Image 1 (cartoon, one colour):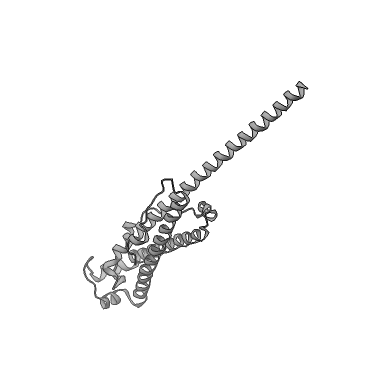
Image 2 (tube, rainbow, N blue to C red):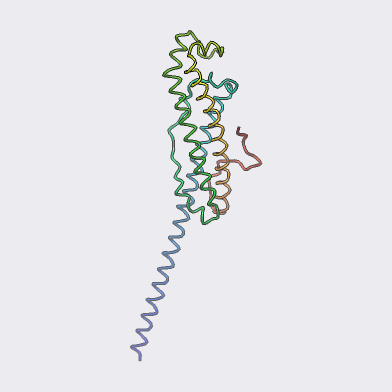
Length: 214
């Protein structure tokens, strides 16, 4: 009888020991997932803020040329190394009821890449084809340019290419700035709801304090 009692005690002890170990392991895994998800959300917020700051810098350079974007000089000096936003790492937002936000962040990322590609295309066009003809025509950098003189110096085809690429840059940068700001601000709110007691990056102001974007 005592033998059976000892065996029972051993089995019960082993069972509760295994259950306790399993519970501790599951708890540690949940904590690690929370840390990983918080880090992914903070990194995404940081990357979106870098994108938005870059777009704001471009908008400030564009501002004096909005009435005639073709007069804008190349803007290579404000293009930092591009950072990649890992949208897949934000899948935890689906469980938090924020699945649509993942799509909005992906769209904002694509809008940013498209705007930067358009700007780089215009930079190359300006440096490789426009500037040599401007120099040949005697245009002084920074001086006001007569549109008729520009068209005469470039020829119709290149002039129209410059106009089109310049307008595309303005439109795409403005669109990307708005989408990036909106996605970043929504991500800020989602992260505060998901991790109310944790420190999260807040890089975008709330709707009432938002910076004005075009």
